[in-house]
Length: 273
Image 1: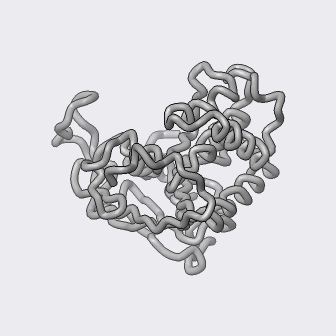
Image 2: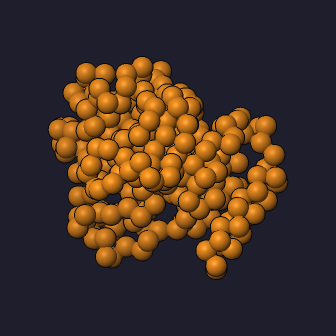
Image 3: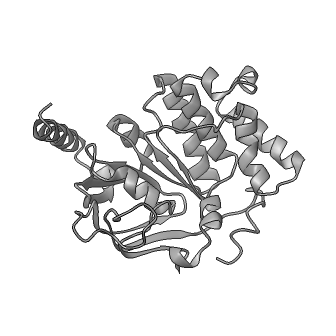
C-alpha cells in the first residue's frame, strides 16, 4: 500500500480493483484524555470483538438502535479513531502501517452533519481534488460529472454553507465524496435530511458506483426500507457487538424492525424519556 498517496489520480475507466477491508476482533473504548494513546481501563467497550470483511462492490447496510456503535465503526474504518484491541487491514496491510491521509483518499467518510468549512459549493467540491494535486481539467470534469449525477443546480455553486438547507449540505457532501472516486464510501445516515426523490436518486447513484466502478458502500441508516432496497448485506450492532452479519436476502426484516423499535423504547425508558 505504499502507493496510496501517489496513484489515486488515475481515472476509473477500465480499472477494476479487488480490495478488502478486514477486521479481526476489533474493540474500542474511550481514552482517558483527548489525544492520549492509552485507553481508559475503567471505560466500557463501546465496540466489542468485531470481525468482518468488506470486498470491492459490496453494499453493506449498518443498522442498530441509537448508540449501538454505528458511527464509531465508520470512524474506525476511516481511521479517525484507532482500535483499542484487534486489527484492521486494508488489502492485507494493517491500518497502522498505512498513511492516514493515503487511507482516507481511498476510504471516504460522509458524516451525518457535514461541514463545508466556510467554502462555497464549488470550492468544497474542488478542494479534495486540489489536495490530490489533480490537473485542473480533471477537477473540472469530475465536478461536472458529480453535478450531473446528483442533479445539483448550477446556482448552488456559489452558495455558502449558511445559504444551504441541512438536506442540501448533506447532498453536497455526498457529491464531494463522489468526485474523489473512492474505493470505499462510508455514509452515516445519508438520507436523514433528504426527501423521497433525492433518497431514490442517491440509491441510483450508489448502484452505479458499485456496479460500474466496484466501489464498496457501507451505509449506516435508520431507514430500513432504504437498507433493504440498496444493500446486499446487513450488519447489525447492538450495544457495540455484532449480532447479525448476513446476506440481505436472508434477513427477517419484520423481526429486525420490531427489535430496533424495542431497543429504542428500552433506551428511552432507561434515560427516563
